[in-house]
Length: 223
Image 1 (tube, rainbow, N blue to C red):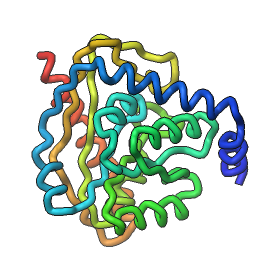
Image 2 (cartoon, rainbow, N blue to C red; image 1 turned 180 degrees about the vertical axis):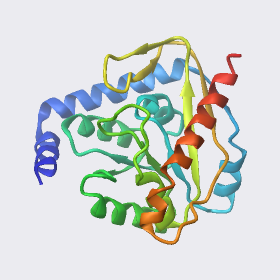
Image 3 (cartoon, rainbow, N blue to C red; image 1 turned 90 degrees about the vertical axis):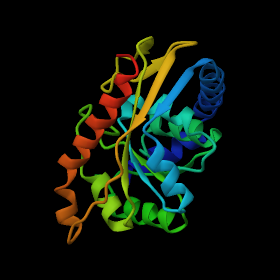
């Protein structure tokens, strides 16, 4: 309840509105300078051609270049209800994303219901398994549980940029510098086959392996 109250208060705070508007403008201006190369995205194209929703799994620290690359595609992003999540949510919405506020660990039941509805409506999902507070690159079971309940395949997404700023945050948030080369890559698509949600939660290690697969492919572009 406290997180919901904080999110509501943040949404009404003019400071957050100004920060979100400024952030959206900066992301768009910066993103236009990036030289993005996307690879291993053949399965995404096939699934979308077949109108099959996808559950994307990505690290919280790599969110920015991935948000920019997939702008305007109508993907639904799960974003925390904390104050900083309010800024990210508004920036994401300005880039053409749909947002669900909550977490797959705290208040998970409500978030899972909303995410399932998004899949039923034909929307892809994007979830950070280490968000919103880390530890960085740890895999909570939310992605596997959502994929199991929605029967949608999981694809891990990763971004890498040698020329970038790294914030001194828990996730070492990645901000590629102006005109940086940015490599984006994806894992193979995988279905989470489990008898129930509890069994699906045990597939977190499998999601972690997919994340490492995508990261390795993103780094390959730079040798």
